[in-house]
Amino acid sequence: MAKITYFAPDTDAYVESVMRHIKEFEELTGDTVEFRIITSDEYYSNQIQGYLAEEGGADVYMSGPILQWEHLNAGFVEPLDEYIAKQEDWYHFEEFIPNLINANRWSGKFGDPLGAGPVISIPINCESYNVAYNKDIFEKYNLQVPRTWEEYFETSKWIAENVEGARGFAQRGTTSWHTMFTGFATQYWSMGATDFDENGKCAIASEKAVEATEKFIEALKVSGPTEWPTQRWYELALDFCAGKYGLIVDSDHYVAYYENPEMSSMTGRVGYATTPVNAEGKSVPNMYTWGLVMNKQSKVKDAAWRFMQWASSKEFLVRAAFEGNMNPTRSSVWEDERFKEHVSGWGDFAKVSRKLAEEDGKILVTPTYKYRIVAERWVKALLEAYDTGKVKAALEAAAKEIDEIMA
Image (tube, rainbow, N blue to C red; front, side, top):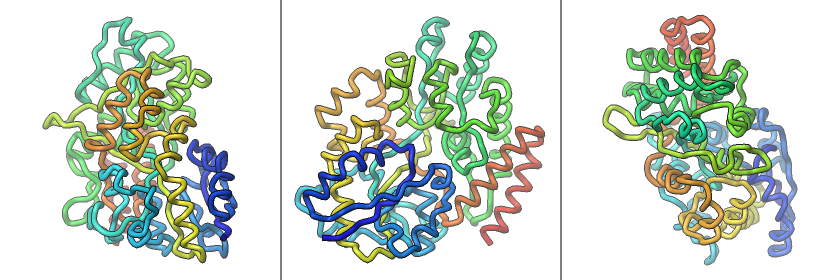
């Protein structure tokens, strides 16, 4: 028997499920679990390494790409391959979607791709970026779901100019690093731009990057949120639930809000599609996972692994999906008849999001333990470009500073 400390953010459906059912784990194993929960804003800005370094600060914690790359470099990530090799018979690690496991394998070296190196996290939910659209608006005005980014921005403009009480497209803002990661990154990479070139130099001020960013900023001003620089993700999702937008490219796990009648007036009236395609006709959505990470500093690693197995088992993840934890990371959960029934009234959600999880979704950014800082500087440039209209100058200044950061 051991005492395990679990460290996680608030306002997270998965964390709430763990807290709700933890007595089950404790009765099964004799271990006890102590929760340390802090605000999402503090957690997502990665101001948590002091907690991870404390004696008893965390044995298992929530993290994901970008954040966990930073933790890995700082010595707070235990590689999991040897634990997976001695998994319990009932655990069935092979049921995890390979694309999502690859997103959580990395050597820790800048320039090395994801998918190589040890497993550093067990994914317990994932998000890729789909198109969600207001079916009431699209059906009333006979609009077509956009298949290119040009069509996406054109349709958004038409909605903003012609539909009373609605803006064209929802888009998260604020100074946080993930402002660049969701809809913007998906559009940016789809238009042929990238963050670093083959020589490791920052490429956000390249010709393609400037062109993609100019289109994004112009569209924001015409049909995006009226207060984009302060638009947080949570309020954005709720505004879409209230019918205030025609379109959004953001997390497909927002479905837990969209289809919840206690939170949404759009239940059953949201359409789902893959993201607009690139020049080759391919959808190129970015992706993110949240996962369970074992702290390398833990003194109870075997007990921590027992907890991680229970909290990422098929049965737990099925149950958590009914409690708002989307999207499944195991193929067996997608195939579970209970889950299929649960999502059967959500239109094309399951077809689209499973394809994103298994095939289309990729972490597009270049792995580096400095990426949070890189992304925050990039976001500062986006906000400056929005404010001043000087897109190229803002990106050139940011690219210069990012190269200095990387050096």
